[in-house]
Image 1 (cartoon, rainbow, N blue to C red):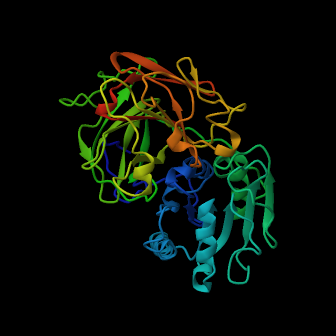
Image 2: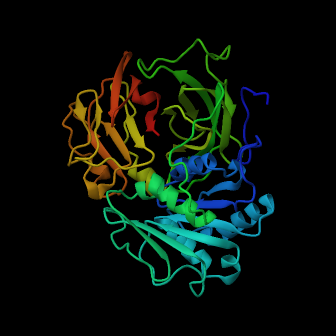
Image 3: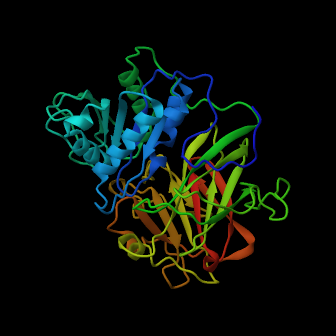
Length: 427
């Protein structure tokens, strides 16, 4: 099939038909948790597509996790009805994680809603009294970890198939291979072990896409963006593979009305997104290359008002320093288990990344004195999933910084924080 260099996906799903999948498998709808988005499920979607599920039958539902308006139960019902209409299936398989389990359980209390769901998987949620459904009639699998420091009340659910994990943090229970294998068997009834890893795409290109949203409420961005390829060893943009006259890989574009974006990417390429919100600060997102077609990569902007805006309003914007966020998309950073550092400054220390913090996003900037103390940033002490370290990164167009995470390295430029916020994303 002929490849087109740049395609916007206006549905959030692939437009390229697969020839190696089984359309008889029921569609799956994945529901994320608090402060999260559809990329919670990126690795699991790729594992399901690696094992015969059609990519156009794997759906992620984004919802407002910091407010109850509009009613997420109603929106989930509209979404599932849309999935059934699109796929011509009679039922879906439903998966919820963390706060998303509460949303799913509430949705399944209605008998009409429950009739649309063949199986439900409850991941890292609070312990419930029965399996899902008005009378517990929806076949339910409950997956929880005794080392989950966010949902401490998890445990076995009567009437459900219960799977107890150890050593998994709150996010890993959703993203790990063991959870995938359990879901695959539950949904298909197969006793054969599936391929646990992500099978690489073949050919010189991979399809990559996702959504641009506001952090927390997941409202779509329709702003302008441009994509560069960059060298992870130097942080410099690759102007060999460029789109004249912009010097970028894609040229200037706008996200679709629902925030979706997508294009064909040369294999093994590292991407830099420069996002220009109409209201708000410029963002520079840096991504590792996908090994397989991945349509669930998210770009998040900081809202201009509300709880999240107040929480993140202290990120500097000056000439002197760089403002950096490190996002680990499939696990937390936990002191004593993981290694995260920027240049010579360790970030995976007890003060910054204790197990009960379950730190997924690490904010790195100076607290105002122009010195590096490595102490926690005050604004993030009481917030789960987010943490911060007082590190002064002197902005310098001619120099770079090196980020280490569990044996992987990404080198990035030291941009001035007045020019935008830098976000390094590890798959």
